[in-house]
Image (tube, rainbow, N blue to C red):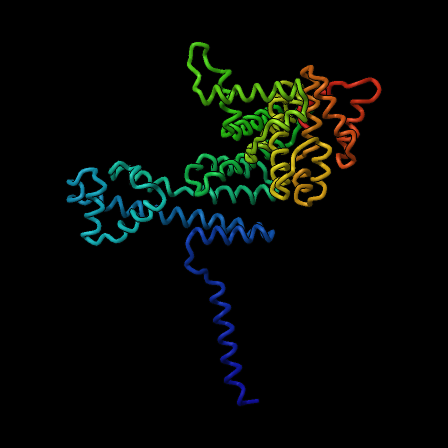
Length: 404
């Protein structure tokens, strides 16, 4: 036994060393810290995830503050001040005089921001370096962690901060996801004031405004929407007028020839805007604004069916849309498409599109959609509600409320 004592002592020493090393954080970059936080978040370890996101924000700020200060120090040198605001000359001076920290700072800056955007201005480069201290991804994930823990007010403030810094998102498409998060919080904030029992209309107004921001990027929607807001003596650009014409033609087809003809003639795949159109459509329909509801639900339903039809064509090149019933039969054979119809509230969208058409006096188009829903058991609640609209007593307007 005695001869094993040195080996045992050695193993204990190694274990202790490994344990201590595990407790000492490695010198990792801020983006690595953020990714570690995401993994902790996905594992449900929200406390440590929050600490990691805050560390990432602090580490990035410290790095760019150091770079900013190094650049300021160089610009304060008398020889450099005589060079004026020429970024080219300042950069050359830093290289020739071995200001390696400034050269590294400029290299990092050019990686984040196009060099030509500074117009050879050292001041502009310094300003851009200062702006890089913000870290919108970290602000977003801090907010997302608070949201997961039910702290909606703190989460909302964080999301707003991330939105203000959105120009720094590495993936600019992420800004849309952020807006959906903000709109979702406004929708789930307590809907009633416990003092007077009234709906929180301000939260709904903010939700509406946020969703409208999302669909500003929908060229077919935003161009045609703006066309109707121009002064009568102002020239309408061709692209805008073309979009407005297409939208009017789509609406006319749906109202006068029905949904089958509408889906036969048109395809539109803007999946980024689909949910915003859908939520706005539900909101306007339930608050009695049938004309605005119809516009948005028409877009949402067209996008949903375009996704389904294009996927079926991808699987079977000679597939052709003939009817909603046949389309849903094919959709039911695909787990992916079935999941998509559930996620996109396909049957609910169809029901409220019909309700908005009926509210606008387009009873025939509304009945066509309700008849489709009434024939589909997979529509669940929306089958029953559609059947009720077609039953004795005839269709009736939905009761006006603030939100579902």
